[in-house]
Length: 468
Image 1 (cartoon, rainbow, N blue to C red):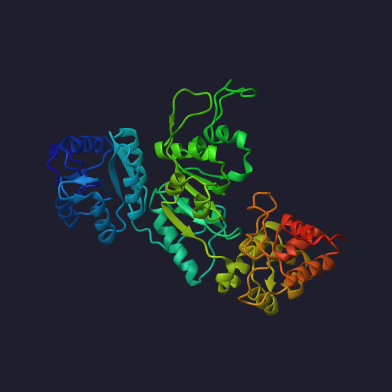
Image 2: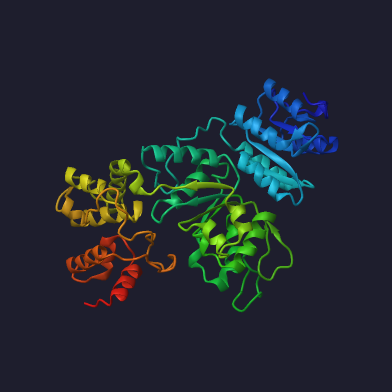
């Protein structure tokens, strides 16, 4: 039981929060703040006292200082992760100790608050932590808010679901890495919908689709009259995501000048609109994604190392479809049902030969390519069963690399990595020319058939000097 303000304890039979700090005035401040929220608290002045209380009582949140007389607060974070993994623990760090806070987040801390403690930030943290469901079990992620579920029962997907469930119970930034078409935004939405911010907004943004000269105003907003055309105040993406999640898709496409400003916004949890004199506090969780290797870009000085460390606190690797071909039957059934619902048509099924063909295809475009293939097949199928010829794919032997080699397959938006292509073989040239002949030199159709973008196809034709 707490020795601080015992007469003002919450009416609850069990304390809601465990406070661990060796400074009595900090403990008193936190207890009073929690009482105003209707929450009870126990306090401890050391790690040993905290462990004893954890053995005797159940809590909904633990707040711990980083510097304690008998050890490091990180040790308590690790102890709670081992013995009470469902208990969110937040750390209190000195101002400017962001590196220490990141270490705590990597160990499993829910969030952090800096000294001197701002009561508004503390209340937000506590409210977010208490929204977590104590019975939440990783690995049972429901479908996301767009109805696009994480489908598949392969070992890779089982492991991915477990990580999604674990990361959802955290406020740390997550970097999602995977090839184009693997469903990175689907995963980001799942992390959001399973976490404490599920009731808040989910704001996705394609970083490569915003012109560099508009980035600052798009991210941070602007005030009326701050530049020509600014006829009224406008909130930015950070303000739109306040209380929820901001998803930075293709974060590698951010110019270096914007990376500096983004880093400050993430670290300070505040933004300054264009034309404003003061910063505005924002409560946003950052999720980011890219098909590109950020560590490699850092080594090439094309991405800031400090921003990389800040957004890559928790990392999630999404497996390509060719590494989980056993999921294709479930994925195909899910996608065909969704297409039928969209078109108000009967649900089509794959013939055994068509399903076998899909299981032998390398899928350079991953799940997005599978969806495109099935949509095309539905349009061509003469009845409710999709035949192998309706798929329109050339089989690539299992174990073979995708036709486009190491080049990620991108949508036709001009945001792919440099159009540099590794050495193109004669065999690939033959396949490209065959696809062009079969599509009567419809380059868009041929590129789709080959699983590459139109720009990548044009590059090859130009390199070979081929014209119709």
